[in-house]
Image 1 (cartoon, rainbow, N blue to C red):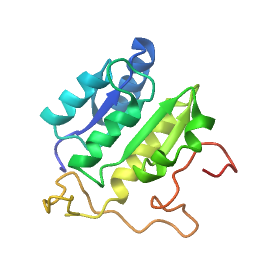
Image 2 (image 1 turned 120 degrees about the horizontal axis):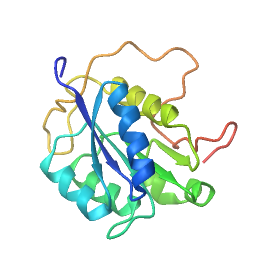
Image 3 (image 1 turned 120 degrees about the vertical axis):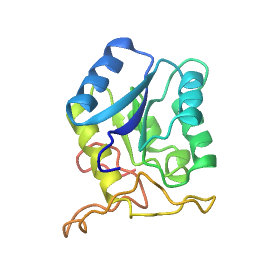
Image 4 (image 1 turned 90 degrees about the vertical axis):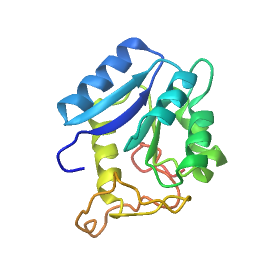
Length: 166
């Protein structure tokens, strides 16, 4: 989508944190779609084509893990990220690996770090990459190969902690 802003679904029940993430995504050229709970986020996901999902884990109506489980039923390759106060606990949760969650960010976190990780994940998707329904991913964009020594996006997700393994 060269001339369109890429939409990012931001699911966060803390209004202040949602505003900060939304501002940072906007200032980085993205169009955030902000939702205050998991149910609202699921509805927005179904109604809006997004390039990535950034979700709080503990939210009303539906947790971040539950939201991403539903997202994965529709799109197995969409970059998904969690922000949580329970980073250590979730870094050991097998569902994080099963759901291919790119990174679990512990609160407090740097909004710039989240936006950079989302942008990198979107840019690393192959052009025309198909989702499980065989449809091409229209959000995919061509990008140069990752530099040597860059961590791969497949396999175990990053915990966001330096030197920590999931």
